[in-house]
Amino acid sequence: MGGENGKSWTPGRQSGSLEGMAESGVNPTAAALLGLLHDGPMTGGQLMAAAERRLAPYWSMTRSQVYRELPVLAERGFVRLGKPGPRMSQPYAITAAGKRTFSRWLAENPGRDTIRNPVALRIAFGGLHSASQLKNLYAMANEYHTEALTAVREQVKNAKKEGDAYDASALEFAVAYHKAALSWLKSAPVG
Image 1 (cartoon, rainbow, N blue to C red):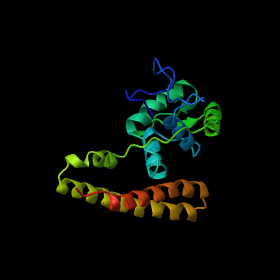
Image 2 (tube, rainbow, N blue to C red):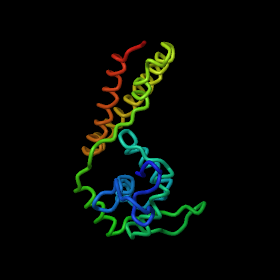
Image 3 (cartoon, rainbow, N blue to C red):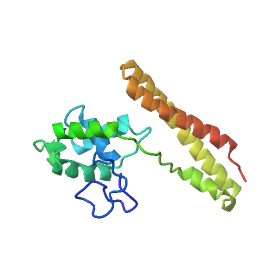
Image 4 (spheres, helix red, strand yellow):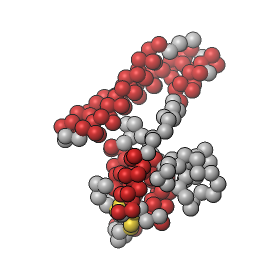
C-alpha cells in the first residue's frame, strides 16, 4: 500500500523514505498481486476481480493501487506483459523472479495490523453527535456487518467445499471481525 501521500512504496517510483516496504522489496499490495498471479496470467481488471473475490473480506485494494503497482512489478522483472487483448487489456504473468520475491515476502515478519474503523472514529466524537445521528450510524454499521458476515460465511463454506483450508482460514478472520464488530455495536453508547 502507499503511504499517507498515496505514492507507491516500490523502489524507482518513490523518492525518499522506503518506510512500509518489506525486506523483499515489495509492499503488501504488490505481494498480493504476485500471489494472485500464481493462479495464472491475468489482466489488471481480472486481478482486481480476483482480489475482490478472494481477499476483500480481510484485505482491501483499490483499482488505482493495482494499476499503479503492475507497471512497477513489470519494470522490476517480477511480472511480464502478455499480448494486448480486447480493449487494449494486457495480461500479466508472474516470472521466476516474481515467485522468488513473493516467497521471500511470505517468509518475512508481517508487521503490525493497521486498524482504521470509520465507525469507531465517529463514535470517539459521539458527544458531538445527536442521539438520532448515533442511532443512524449504529443502524448502518449493524446492517453492513450483518450482511458482510452472511456473505463471508458463505465464502468460508465454499472454500471448505473446494478443499482450500488456507483460504477458509483467512476468511474465518473476517467472520470473527464482523462478529466482534456486531458485539461491540451492541454496547456502544447511544447518547
